[in-house]
Image 1 (cartoon, helix red, strand yellow):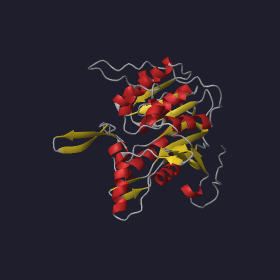
Image 2: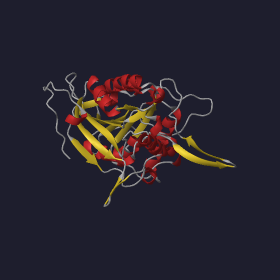
Image 3: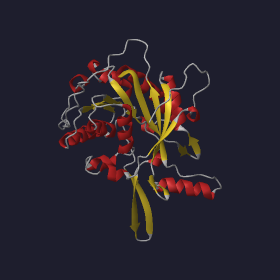
Image 4: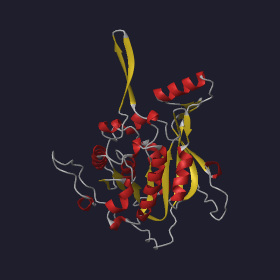
Length: 332
C-alpha cells in the first residue's frame, strides 16, 4: 500500500474526501475470535477495545521490526500486545488503574506465548505522557496508534432477562471508569480539546517522520450526527500533524455474497427507530483510521536505528492498601 502526501503548500482545506483512501479487510473474524487465547479473558470487559486486526495491520504497515509503537490511551493494551507479537517495542499510557493493570497482564501473557518485543503500560493521564515516560524514550516512536473514547451507544454488552411477566435487556461492560479526567464522559468539545492536547504533548515522544494513526467512528447523540473522524482531522492539524491518508477498516466480514455485518443491539435499535421515523439511516460497517505524519523542524530528529525499547515490567498489581509506583519507578 502506498501513501501519498498532500501538498502542504496548497491552501485548500484538507478534508476526509480530499485524502487518499484505502480499505483494510480487518474483520474476517469477529472480535471474540480475534482475542481468543491471545488476550486474558478479563479483557472482554473493556467497552471500547480496538479490533486486534486493525492494530496489527497498522503496525505491520507503518513500522518495521525493532521500532517503537506508542499508545497514549492504551486501555487493555491491544496495540501494545499486537506490537510485541510483531517484534516491535510498545509504550502505553492508561488513566484507569484496572485497565493499566490488565494491559500489563496482557503483555505478560504475550511474553509467555513467545512474543519477541517488549512493552510497558504507564499509569497516568495521556496529556502528561511525555512526563510519565522517561526522556530516554523521547523521539523514538515510529508509530502512535490510539483511539479516543466515544459513542457510549456503540459500546457495551447485553444480557437478556426474563422474569415472570417481564422481559428486559440489561447493558453491562459499558463504562471506561470514573477516574478524574476520564474523557469517556466528557462533552464532545471537551474531548476534542483534550485529544488535541494529547497529540501535541506526544509529539516529543515521536521520531521525525513518524506516523500517527487514530481510529474513529461517527455516532448519533440525541439524534444529532457527530462526525468524529472529521473532528480528529482538525485535532491532528491543530497539534501540528500533517494528514496524509484516510483508511477504511472494515468491521464486517468480506464474503462472496458481500459484507457480513456484526451490528450491536443498540445500533440496530437506533437504525430501526430512525427508519420508522422516516430518516434514511444505514448501518456503519467500518471504522475510519486517520493517518498523519509528524514532521519536526527543531530539535533535530534522532537517527533511526535499532531500538532497545522498554524493558518488560512484571504485571503485578500493588498489594492491598499500597499505591501504584510513581512515574520514576515505572520507567522501563
